[in-house]
Amino acid sequence: MARRYFGTDGVRGVAGKDLTPDLVERLGRAATIWAGGGEVLVGRDTRASGPELEQALAAGIASAGGGAVLGGVLPTPAIALFSLDLGAVVSASHNPPEYNGVKLFDRSGSKLPDAAEEEIEGLLDAPGGGEGLIERTDEIRDRYLEHVLDRFGSDLAGLEIVVDCANGAMYEVAPTAFERLGADVTAIGVEPDGTNINVGCGATDLRSLEHKVVEANADLGVAFDGDGDRMLAVDASGQAVEGDQILAVLALHLGVELVVVTQMTNLGFHELMRERGIRVVTTDVGDRYVLEALLREEGTLGGEQSGHIICLDGHVTGDGLAAALLLCKALEGRTLAEAAAVMPRFPQVTENVPASRKEIPAAVAKEVKRLNGTLERARVLVRPSGTEPVIRVLAEAATDQEAASLCGTISALVRRELG
Image (tube, rainbow, N blue to C red; front, top):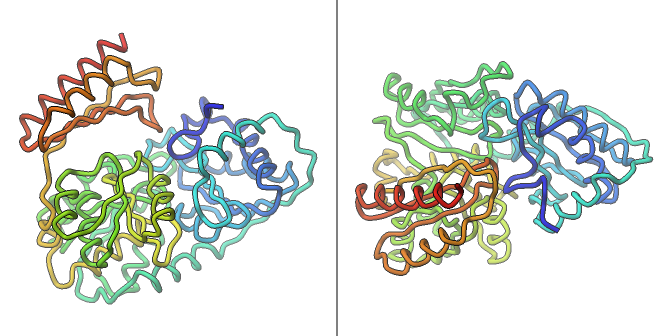
């Protein structure tokens, strides 16, 4: 059975329209029935719709006889780390404030596989009949902070850093973490009002961070997305450093033999890993697919260009704060620009083509296959988004001009075939 509600990263949509309290309550009940009852740790980000949907999710959990333990505003990786029989996060991650969503984790802190999500969807209309409990806890944030500092922290005395928390779930914990490690911290995106998460700030819009790093004469800046499971960086000159570069720096610093990436990963990353004798495993786009491959291949490091970085040496999932702390440790006296320069970057051009359906037209798939069979040190990737109603087109080549031409040609073909 094809999934109707679950996408690449949970269930997501415009709050009150696509994602209603009724749907969220049914999700809570269905997931609890699927898990056989037990306790569910629930966290959320800072969206205005969060408290209402949190209550709906808790009501669904309780109606199935489960116990909902509400942790309040927490980064997604905190829920994964301390998941009970299940973990649930009310968040739309990097999406704009009007969106919200529900992400589920099993008791080991892993996102549920496609098959489990299909089974949960099959239980959406199942009756409850239970009399569970709803309680609150305020200890998860401190437990999370202590764990991340202990496993990923280092002495950051003398480091001047700008931290952009996207007015999201990291707004308290991330600046505190860097300050406790001795860094000189300038924090932005730390005034959430329910309507400003990911708006002109955070990992989805680095312009404020780029400006602030230069203005403050800082050594670097880091930016999180709304729920804190992603991180991107900015060097001292205000130049963005994307996930592929961060992953390359960490792979060399940690001395891993294997790294897991996605189809979006830059060709320059692959060339660097070949040169260094590090095996690369490539998955579909989505951090849960990266995690599944890491567990299968018994690896510890993987990630996405978008800033999902997973280090399983001390963690169970992707964590923006853990990745940021690891990156600072990996600099080893270098500037971020010097560290990131180890990876050559091929120009990439992307375009999102609005689409009401998620299938790639056959003519597009055929042309992409033909093109990729003829290209050298270049490629085209076309895929439906798992979180938005668009078809994503990426072209990568040795020059900006070639990448732009390839992207424009395929995007035009996608629009024509979609009608």
